[in-house]
Figure 1 (cartoon, helix red, strand yellow):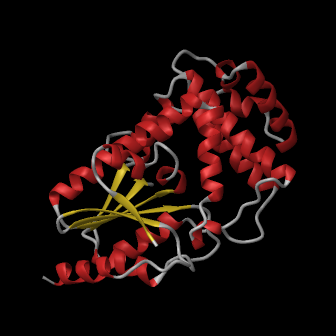
Figure 2: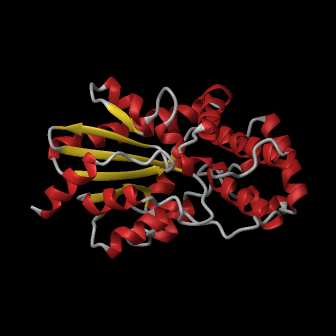
Amino acid sequence: MLSLALARQASATPAPASGPLLYLARRGRARVTLLGFGDAKDDDWITPFIRRTLRSSTELWLEVSQEPGTEPDATSKREQLTHDPAGRSFFDVLEPAVRARALEYCAQLGIPREKLEAQRPWSAFYTINAAYWSRHPPSYQPRNPDETLLKLAKDAGKPVRYEMPDQLAFARFMAAMPDAAQSQYIVFLLDFLDDLAAGRSPVEFAWTHGDTTTGERAVERMRTRTPELYQIMQVQRNAWWAQTVDRLLDAGGTHLIAVGQMHVLGPDGIPKQLERRGIACRPLV
């Protein structure tokens, strides 16, 4: 009864315009609220409305759990997925133009070629990204909004569900991407690093005030410049989320889903895919 009362209170309260953009899908008394987040340097983005939404929710949904996995030898199995089963090197899988760019970044960031050679592109992505931020540390201590929400949910005794329930599931998903998408995953990263180096796309926090310009630009670039990657990361994954929202609405209750900002934006974002399923998903403003 208390949960239902809180749900009604949250649904009747408009989201503050100064906070992050949220979306609401509803069916009868069932509610699913979507939050798309980006980088954060503190927890000021957690508005009273978001706290009420989490408090009134049956459960919290996030993208990827940090747990290694429950299968025997899960960590070892994940490590195996960072290597190409045919024995090809990282550089063998990349398109020639991407290979040249990757080699340039290896030189700039001091990454020994042999450190990347044994990795698949999806895994090398994180090695290159970590090396960049090691050379160019931000002036603040980054905070992950999903980790903040995870802690709040656990402190409140809320169940937490995931698109990918552990790191082994994540590795299997990434390793299953075809070569073209793997190569484009590196393109997406290097384009972002090029923008940072040129001062075209500084890390910023406009999403915390409802400004989705940066995320929309990233979605459009992925759609037009790396289409195979876009199909997997936006079209396919967001279709899974839309199906999950549909199922949650059928089950009833109230639910909060928090995902990276790109997943709620663009022509194949979760709200648009819900609309194609006949489910209205409106922004809360």
